[in-house]
Length: 401
Image 1 (cartoon, rainbow, N blue to C red):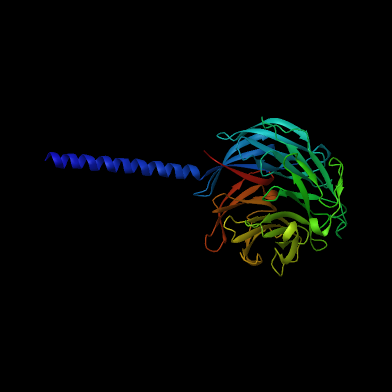
Image 2 (cartoon, rainbow, N blue to C red):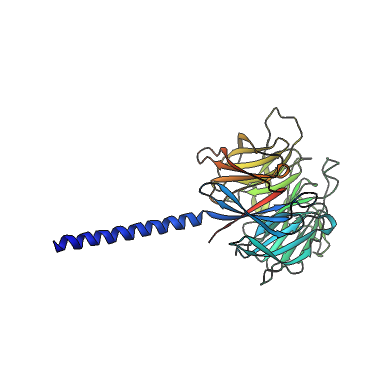
């Protein structure tokens, strides 16, 4: 009888420990699928006050408002530092444009301004980090230049280390391509090159980046004066697009073999294959629109699914998210679907870090629409719609601890 009781007690203990372990694992799983989402907006002539915070549940796709994170003018594009402590934003405000550094309180989603510096150009529309996390790089659209700022130990921005204006022959669109218009900037995987999509010049410029100094130079045609130099394109250090394409944003395949360039003006994706010495060879151009569509459209955002199997773009005018299947060997795209964005003017969208959901920000209908991504086909299905988001134009994620 004693043995039976002891055995029973032992089994009960084991069961209790198993339940506790399962509960703990479930808690960790739930926590790992929780994210803070920060949304950048336009404040000029809108009801927006600045940057807004949301909780995002990547198990259910639920987006829950936390409120205004910080009051700041026209924070059109955001970047959360890899350490999770700081957030950086470009303030796209014409001649008063700036770049701002904030301290982030992740639990509340609140931001505190650390400092703000002039953007050294007009209408910055993109911001990113170099691979070391020691610099921010911005693209100034109207003035057609790019700038680099060091990140100090306390998260503040230091005085710029580089300022370079794109230069070259403009495209044929007289309204949009009257001069250089830097619209996106990103770093190569090894941090040696900075790529700049210039909508006005129909080129993706490729600049040398010195991560020790934070400087940008042109390998074969750069001025030694990084403060005021203008770099001219050459075949070796640019990717050339068809006249009038208007390159806006760029993504790379995970292995770096292929570059995908979204053309805003012609609503296309141009695919480049990577050759030796950072040169690129065009292998495909494909429309983001259905064949019979003939109305006004401006392509806006491009992203690869974390699996690398699908590529998505957004269409403003047609108001859709376009889906493409990716050939992993050849890099070429096949159009597989068009999905209504659930609102007007989807200026930006973001795929959550788990790859299960796509969140589209509809600028002119003040909404964020959450779509589930089919794990087999990549097709989108609307899950929820959050109204009353004033003029949303950018969304970034931070995992919760």
